Image (cartoon, rainbow, N blue to C red; front, side):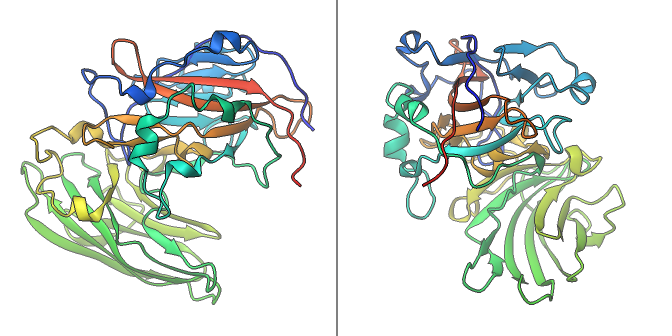
Length: 390
Protein backbone atom coordinates (compact mmCIF):
# COMPACT_ATOMS: atom_id res chain seq x y z
CA UNK A 1 0.00 0.00 0.00
CA UNK A 2 1.40 3.36 -0.97
CA UNK A 3 1.70 5.93 1.82
CA UNK A 4 0.01 9.33 1.99
CA UNK A 5 2.23 12.42 1.85
CA UNK A 6 1.34 16.09 1.92
CA UNK A 7 2.15 18.31 -1.06
CA UNK A 8 2.24 21.97 -1.94
CA UNK A 9 -0.64 23.82 -3.58
CA UNK A 10 0.10 25.31 -7.01
CA UNK A 11 -1.53 25.74 -10.44
CA UNK A 12 -1.14 23.79 -13.82
CA UNK A 13 -0.10 23.25 -17.46
CA UNK A 14 -0.50 23.62 -21.20
CA UNK A 15 -0.89 21.68 -24.48
CA UNK A 16 -2.01 22.12 -28.14
CA UNK A 17 -4.63 20.34 -30.17
CA UNK A 18 -4.07 17.75 -32.82
CA UNK A 19 -5.11 14.25 -33.64
CA UNK A 20 -8.63 13.59 -32.52
CA UNK A 21 -8.32 16.97 -30.85
CA UNK A 22 -6.74 19.35 -33.29
CA UNK A 23 -4.94 22.59 -32.79
CA UNK A 24 -6.80 25.50 -31.27
CA UNK A 25 -6.27 29.10 -32.32
CA UNK A 26 -5.00 31.44 -29.61
CA UNK A 27 -7.79 33.89 -30.42
CA UNK A 28 -10.63 31.52 -29.63
CA UNK A 29 -12.78 32.03 -26.56
CA UNK A 30 -12.40 29.69 -23.60
CA UNK A 31 -15.32 27.22 -23.67
CA UNK A 32 -17.51 27.56 -20.62
CA UNK A 33 -16.84 23.93 -19.74
CA UNK A 34 -13.14 24.59 -19.18
CA UNK A 35 -13.27 27.63 -16.94
CA UNK A 36 -10.98 27.59 -13.95
CA UNK A 37 -12.11 25.55 -10.90
CA UNK A 38 -14.08 27.35 -8.23
CA UNK A 39 -13.85 26.88 -4.49
CA UNK A 40 -10.64 24.84 -4.43
CA UNK A 41 -9.06 27.21 -1.97
CA UNK A 42 -11.11 25.35 0.65
CA UNK A 43 -9.69 22.01 -0.51
CA UNK A 44 -6.39 22.15 1.33
CA UNK A 45 -5.40 18.61 0.30
CA UNK A 46 -5.69 19.43 -3.42
CA UNK A 47 -2.84 20.99 -5.39
CA UNK A 48 -3.64 22.98 -8.53
CA UNK A 49 -1.31 24.25 -11.22
CA UNK A 50 -1.62 25.75 -14.67
CA UNK A 51 1.38 24.88 -16.85
CA UNK A 52 2.68 26.63 -19.91
CA UNK A 53 2.80 23.76 -22.38
CA UNK A 54 2.22 26.01 -25.39
CA UNK A 55 5.61 25.39 -27.01
CA UNK A 56 5.37 22.94 -29.92
CA UNK A 57 8.98 21.83 -29.53
CA UNK A 58 9.81 21.93 -25.81
CA UNK A 59 7.98 20.16 -23.00
CA UNK A 60 7.25 21.43 -19.50
CA UNK A 61 8.31 19.00 -16.74
CA UNK A 62 6.34 18.73 -13.50
CA UNK A 63 7.28 17.19 -10.16
CA UNK A 64 3.98 16.27 -8.49
CA UNK A 65 5.42 16.02 -4.99
CA UNK A 66 6.87 19.53 -4.92
CA UNK A 67 4.41 21.04 -7.41
CA UNK A 68 7.34 22.61 -9.28
CA UNK A 69 7.82 22.92 -13.02
CA UNK A 70 11.47 22.03 -13.52
CA UNK A 71 13.81 23.95 -15.82
CA UNK A 72 15.05 20.99 -17.88
CA UNK A 73 16.17 20.69 -21.45
CA UNK A 74 15.02 17.66 -23.44
CA UNK A 75 18.50 16.16 -23.09
CA UNK A 76 18.50 16.73 -19.32
CA UNK A 77 15.01 15.27 -18.94
CA UNK A 78 16.07 12.14 -20.84
CA UNK A 79 18.38 11.21 -17.96
CA UNK A 80 16.46 12.69 -15.01
CA UNK A 81 14.06 11.06 -12.56
CA UNK A 82 13.24 14.40 -10.91
CA UNK A 83 10.15 14.92 -13.09
CA UNK A 84 6.98 12.85 -13.01
CA UNK A 85 4.93 14.32 -15.88
CA UNK A 86 5.78 16.18 -19.09
CA UNK A 87 3.42 18.41 -21.10
CA UNK A 88 3.60 19.55 -24.69
CA UNK A 89 0.34 20.96 -26.02
CA UNK A 90 -2.29 18.20 -25.61
CA UNK A 91 0.27 15.46 -25.09
CA UNK A 92 0.93 14.30 -21.53
CA UNK A 93 3.79 11.92 -20.76
CA UNK A 94 4.93 10.01 -17.70
CA UNK A 95 8.58 9.48 -16.79
CA UNK A 96 8.86 5.83 -17.81
CA UNK A 97 9.27 3.51 -20.77
CA UNK A 98 9.72 5.34 -24.07
CA UNK A 99 9.29 8.76 -22.42
CA UNK A 100 11.92 8.77 -19.70
CA UNK A 101 14.25 6.85 -17.36
CA UNK A 102 11.87 6.83 -14.39
CA UNK A 103 9.34 4.33 -13.09
CA UNK A 104 6.24 6.54 -13.13
CA UNK A 105 3.16 4.57 -14.18
CA UNK A 106 -0.49 5.48 -14.63
CA UNK A 107 -4.01 4.08 -14.64
CA UNK A 108 -7.56 5.39 -14.90
CA UNK A 109 -9.20 5.81 -11.50
CA UNK A 110 -12.57 7.24 -12.67
CA UNK A 111 -13.41 6.70 -16.33
CA UNK A 112 -16.30 9.18 -16.66
CA UNK A 113 -18.32 6.76 -18.81
CA UNK A 114 -21.35 9.05 -18.71
CA UNK A 115 -19.45 11.58 -20.86
CA UNK A 116 -19.71 9.15 -23.77
CA UNK A 117 -22.52 7.37 -25.60
CA UNK A 118 -22.84 3.60 -25.83
CA UNK A 119 -20.95 3.74 -29.15
CA UNK A 120 -18.08 5.69 -27.54
CA UNK A 121 -18.89 9.11 -29.02
CA UNK A 122 -18.71 12.22 -26.77
CA UNK A 123 -22.09 13.19 -25.32
CA UNK A 124 -22.23 16.90 -26.10
CA UNK A 125 -24.88 17.60 -23.50
CA UNK A 126 -22.75 16.15 -20.69
CA UNK A 127 -19.50 17.76 -21.85
CA UNK A 128 -20.99 21.21 -22.34
CA UNK A 129 -22.70 21.26 -18.94
CA UNK A 130 -19.85 19.84 -16.84
CA UNK A 131 -17.60 22.17 -14.86
CA UNK A 132 -14.56 21.69 -12.69
CA UNK A 133 -16.73 22.30 -9.64
CA UNK A 134 -19.39 19.70 -10.55
CA UNK A 135 -16.72 17.09 -11.27
CA UNK A 136 -14.62 17.68 -8.13
CA UNK A 137 -16.38 14.85 -6.28
CA UNK A 138 -14.71 12.29 -8.54
CA UNK A 139 -11.26 13.46 -7.51
CA UNK A 140 -12.28 13.25 -3.85
CA UNK A 141 -13.68 9.71 -4.10
CA UNK A 142 -11.96 6.67 -2.64
CA UNK A 143 -9.75 4.93 -5.21
CA UNK A 144 -9.14 1.23 -5.70
CA UNK A 145 -5.84 -0.26 -6.71
CA UNK A 146 -6.01 -0.71 -10.50
CA UNK A 147 -5.81 -4.13 -12.13
CA UNK A 148 -2.81 -2.95 -14.16
CA UNK A 149 -0.52 0.06 -14.49
CA UNK A 150 0.66 1.55 -17.79
CA UNK A 151 4.17 2.65 -18.75
CA UNK A 152 4.77 5.03 -21.65
CA UNK A 153 5.37 3.74 -25.19
CA UNK A 154 5.47 5.21 -28.70
CA UNK A 155 2.10 6.78 -29.48
CA UNK A 156 0.46 7.98 -32.69
CA UNK A 157 -2.78 9.85 -33.29
CA UNK A 158 -3.96 6.73 -35.12
CA UNK A 159 -4.10 5.16 -31.63
CA UNK A 160 -6.24 2.00 -31.77
CA UNK A 161 -9.27 3.61 -33.42
CA UNK A 162 -8.49 2.05 -36.83
CA UNK A 163 -9.39 -1.52 -35.90
CA UNK A 164 -11.99 -3.40 -33.87
CA UNK A 165 -11.49 -6.48 -31.71
CA UNK A 166 -13.96 -9.33 -31.24
CA UNK A 167 -13.51 -10.67 -27.71
CA UNK A 168 -15.37 -13.88 -28.53
CA UNK A 169 -13.25 -14.88 -31.52
CA UNK A 170 -10.03 -12.94 -30.97
CA UNK A 171 -10.28 -11.54 -34.49
CA UNK A 172 -9.28 -7.99 -35.39
CA UNK A 173 -11.04 -6.25 -38.26
CA UNK A 174 -11.01 -2.81 -39.89
CA UNK A 175 -12.87 0.03 -38.22
CA UNK A 176 -13.86 1.86 -41.39
CA UNK A 177 -16.10 4.28 -39.50
CA UNK A 178 -13.01 6.41 -38.76
CA UNK A 179 -10.51 8.21 -40.96
CA UNK A 180 -7.45 10.47 -40.65
CA UNK A 181 -5.49 13.13 -42.46
CA UNK A 182 -1.80 12.29 -42.85
CA UNK A 183 1.23 14.45 -43.72
CA UNK A 184 4.04 12.88 -45.73
CA UNK A 185 7.60 12.29 -44.57
CA UNK A 186 8.67 15.22 -46.74
CA UNK A 187 6.15 17.45 -44.97
CA UNK A 188 4.80 18.99 -48.19
CA UNK A 189 2.07 16.55 -49.30
CA UNK A 190 -0.98 15.12 -47.56
CA UNK A 191 -3.54 12.37 -47.77
CA UNK A 192 -6.89 11.29 -46.37
CA UNK A 193 -6.77 7.67 -45.23
CA UNK A 194 -9.15 5.00 -44.03
CA UNK A 195 -8.47 1.35 -43.14
CA UNK A 196 -10.92 -0.47 -45.40
CA UNK A 197 -9.83 -4.05 -44.72
CA UNK A 198 -7.99 -5.77 -41.86
CA UNK A 199 -8.00 -9.51 -41.19
CA UNK A 200 -5.97 -10.53 -38.13
CA UNK A 201 -7.14 -13.72 -36.38
CA UNK A 202 -4.95 -13.35 -33.31
CA UNK A 203 -5.56 -16.84 -31.91
CA UNK A 204 -4.77 -18.94 -34.97
CA UNK A 205 -1.10 -18.09 -35.47
CA UNK A 206 -1.62 -16.87 -39.04
CA UNK A 207 -0.44 -13.31 -38.57
CA UNK A 208 -2.16 -10.45 -40.41
CA UNK A 209 -3.74 -12.28 -43.35
CA UNK A 210 -4.56 -9.09 -45.24
CA UNK A 211 -4.88 -5.33 -44.84
CA UNK A 212 -5.97 -2.46 -47.09
CA UNK A 213 -5.64 1.27 -46.51
CA UNK A 214 -7.11 3.68 -49.03
CA UNK A 215 -5.42 7.08 -49.50
CA UNK A 216 -6.78 10.16 -51.26
CA UNK A 217 -3.64 12.15 -52.03
CA UNK A 218 -3.03 15.90 -52.07
CA UNK A 219 0.37 16.26 -53.80
CA UNK A 220 2.93 18.91 -52.93
CA UNK A 221 1.87 22.31 -54.24
CA UNK A 222 -1.78 21.30 -54.59
CA UNK A 223 -4.71 22.51 -52.47
CA UNK A 224 -7.08 19.54 -52.91
CA UNK A 225 -7.08 15.76 -53.23
CA UNK A 226 -6.24 14.83 -56.81
CA UNK A 227 -5.75 11.05 -56.85
CA UNK A 228 -6.21 7.85 -54.87
CA UNK A 229 -3.90 4.93 -54.04
CA UNK A 230 -4.14 1.74 -52.00
CA UNK A 231 -1.74 0.19 -49.49
CA UNK A 232 -2.19 -3.59 -49.20
CA UNK A 233 -0.21 -6.49 -47.79
CA UNK A 234 0.23 -9.19 -45.19
CA UNK A 235 2.46 -9.64 -42.13
CA UNK A 236 3.52 -13.13 -40.97
CA UNK A 237 2.80 -14.62 -37.58
CA UNK A 238 6.36 -13.86 -36.47
CA UNK A 239 5.51 -10.15 -36.73
CA UNK A 240 7.07 -7.35 -38.72
CA UNK A 241 6.33 -4.05 -40.42
CA UNK A 242 5.15 -2.82 -43.80
CA UNK A 243 5.63 0.77 -45.00
CA UNK A 244 3.95 2.83 -47.70
CA UNK A 245 4.82 5.98 -49.65
CA UNK A 246 1.50 7.51 -50.69
CA UNK A 247 3.16 10.02 -53.04
CA UNK A 248 4.50 7.23 -55.27
CA UNK A 249 1.67 4.83 -54.38
CA UNK A 250 4.14 2.09 -53.52
CA UNK A 251 5.23 -0.13 -50.66
CA UNK A 252 8.76 0.81 -49.61
CA UNK A 253 11.32 -0.38 -47.12
CA UNK A 254 10.78 0.74 -43.54
CA UNK A 255 14.53 1.39 -43.41
CA UNK A 256 14.20 4.11 -46.06
CA UNK A 257 13.38 7.79 -45.48
CA UNK A 258 10.52 7.92 -47.98
CA UNK A 259 7.83 5.97 -46.15
CA UNK A 260 4.79 7.92 -44.92
CA UNK A 261 2.71 5.30 -43.07
CA UNK A 262 3.86 2.18 -41.23
CA UNK A 263 1.73 -0.78 -40.13
CA UNK A 264 3.25 -3.42 -37.88
CA UNK A 265 2.93 -5.79 -34.97
CA UNK A 266 5.30 -7.44 -32.54
CA UNK A 267 3.95 -9.75 -29.89
CA UNK A 268 0.88 -7.97 -28.54
CA UNK A 269 1.93 -4.59 -29.87
CA UNK A 270 -0.12 -3.62 -32.96
CA UNK A 271 0.40 -0.15 -34.42
CA UNK A 272 -0.12 2.31 -37.25
CA UNK A 273 2.38 5.20 -37.33
CA UNK A 274 3.57 8.20 -39.31
CA UNK A 275 7.16 9.01 -40.29
CA UNK A 276 7.77 11.44 -37.44
CA UNK A 277 8.98 11.81 -33.86
CA UNK A 278 10.21 8.55 -32.33
CA UNK A 279 8.71 6.55 -35.22
CA UNK A 280 10.88 7.97 -38.00
CA UNK A 281 13.18 10.73 -39.17
CA UNK A 282 10.63 12.46 -41.41
CA UNK A 283 8.34 15.47 -41.05
CA UNK A 284 5.13 13.42 -41.07
CA UNK A 285 2.13 13.81 -38.82
CA UNK A 286 -1.49 12.82 -38.28
CA UNK A 287 -4.71 14.77 -37.75
CA UNK A 288 -7.70 12.81 -36.50
CA UNK A 289 -9.53 10.63 -35.79
CA UNK A 290 -12.57 11.89 -37.70
CA UNK A 291 -15.86 10.14 -38.27
CA UNK A 292 -15.60 8.96 -41.86
CA UNK A 293 -19.08 10.33 -42.54
CA UNK A 294 -17.58 13.79 -41.92
CA UNK A 295 -14.08 13.30 -43.32
CA UNK A 296 -15.40 11.87 -46.59
CA UNK A 297 -16.87 15.30 -47.37
CA UNK A 298 -13.47 17.03 -47.16
CA UNK A 299 -11.92 18.14 -50.43
CA UNK A 300 -8.60 19.21 -48.91
CA UNK A 301 -6.22 18.11 -46.16
CA UNK A 302 -5.06 21.66 -45.47
CA UNK A 303 -8.26 23.76 -45.60
CA UNK A 304 -11.67 22.98 -44.13
CA UNK A 305 -15.07 23.93 -45.56
CA UNK A 306 -14.99 27.33 -43.80
CA UNK A 307 -11.57 28.16 -45.28
CA UNK A 308 -9.66 27.62 -42.01
CA UNK A 309 -6.05 26.45 -42.39
CA UNK A 310 -5.56 22.91 -41.08
CA UNK A 311 -1.85 22.53 -41.81
CA UNK A 312 -0.76 23.41 -38.24
CA UNK A 313 -3.03 20.79 -36.69
CA UNK A 314 -1.04 17.72 -37.61
CA UNK A 315 0.66 15.96 -34.73
CA UNK A 316 3.95 14.10 -34.98
CA UNK A 317 4.19 10.70 -33.32
CA UNK A 318 5.29 10.96 -29.74
CA UNK A 319 5.36 8.86 -26.61
CA UNK A 320 2.55 8.40 -24.14
CA UNK A 321 0.64 5.91 -22.03
CA UNK A 322 -2.52 6.19 -19.99
CA UNK A 323 -3.25 9.72 -21.27
CA UNK A 324 -3.21 8.51 -24.87
CA UNK A 325 -5.03 5.25 -24.13
CA UNK A 326 -7.77 7.16 -22.28
CA UNK A 327 -7.80 10.75 -23.54
CA UNK A 328 -8.49 13.60 -21.13
CA UNK A 329 -10.48 15.71 -23.61
CA UNK A 330 -12.96 15.83 -26.49
CA UNK A 331 -12.48 18.11 -29.46
CA UNK A 332 -14.67 20.22 -31.75
CA UNK A 333 -17.98 19.47 -30.03
CA UNK A 334 -19.57 22.63 -31.44
CA UNK A 335 -17.65 22.81 -34.69
CA UNK A 336 -15.38 25.59 -33.36
CA UNK A 337 -12.07 23.70 -33.02
CA UNK A 338 -12.21 23.91 -29.23
CA UNK A 339 -11.33 21.39 -26.55
CA UNK A 340 -13.35 20.23 -23.53
CA UNK A 341 -11.98 18.12 -20.64
CA UNK A 342 -13.82 14.97 -19.59
CA UNK A 343 -12.56 15.24 -15.98
CA UNK A 344 -11.32 11.67 -15.92
CA UNK A 345 -9.37 10.88 -12.77
CA UNK A 346 -5.97 9.35 -13.41
CA UNK A 347 -3.87 7.52 -10.84
CA UNK A 348 -0.14 8.31 -10.99
CA UNK A 349 2.30 6.06 -9.11
CA UNK A 350 5.52 8.08 -8.91
CA UNK A 351 7.76 5.02 -8.57
CA UNK A 352 6.40 1.57 -9.31
CA UNK A 353 9.49 -0.03 -7.75
CA UNK A 354 8.99 1.63 -4.36
CA UNK A 355 5.96 0.81 -2.20
CA UNK A 356 6.56 3.95 -0.14
CA UNK A 357 6.47 6.39 -3.06
CA UNK A 358 3.35 8.58 -3.26
CA UNK A 359 0.42 7.85 -5.54
CA UNK A 360 -1.68 10.77 -6.80
CA UNK A 361 -5.20 11.08 -8.15
CA UNK A 362 -5.19 13.75 -10.86
CA UNK A 363 -7.67 15.57 -13.11
CA UNK A 364 -7.11 17.88 -16.08
CA UNK A 365 -9.70 20.64 -15.76
CA UNK A 366 -8.86 23.07 -18.57
CA UNK A 367 -6.68 23.92 -21.54
CA UNK A 368 -6.82 27.71 -21.90
CA UNK A 369 -5.10 30.64 -20.22
CA UNK A 370 -7.09 33.58 -18.87
CA UNK A 371 -6.55 35.45 -22.14
CA UNK A 372 -7.98 32.48 -24.11
CA UNK A 373 -4.58 31.26 -25.32
CA UNK A 374 -4.53 27.51 -25.91
CA UNK A 375 -1.85 25.18 -24.59
CA UNK A 376 -2.22 26.07 -20.90
CA UNK A 377 -3.81 23.02 -19.26
CA UNK A 378 -4.83 23.17 -15.63
CA UNK A 379 -4.29 20.20 -13.33
CA UNK A 380 -5.42 19.38 -9.85
CA UNK A 381 -4.18 16.43 -7.83
CA UNK A 382 -4.05 14.91 -4.37
CA UNK A 383 -2.28 12.01 -2.67
CA UNK A 384 -4.35 8.85 -2.25
CA UNK A 385 -4.17 5.57 -0.36
CA UNK A 386 -5.39 2.90 -2.76
CA UNK A 387 -7.66 0.27 -1.29
CA UNK A 388 -7.72 -3.31 -2.44
CA UNK A 389 -10.55 -4.07 -4.91
CA UNK A 390 -13.55 -5.95 -3.56
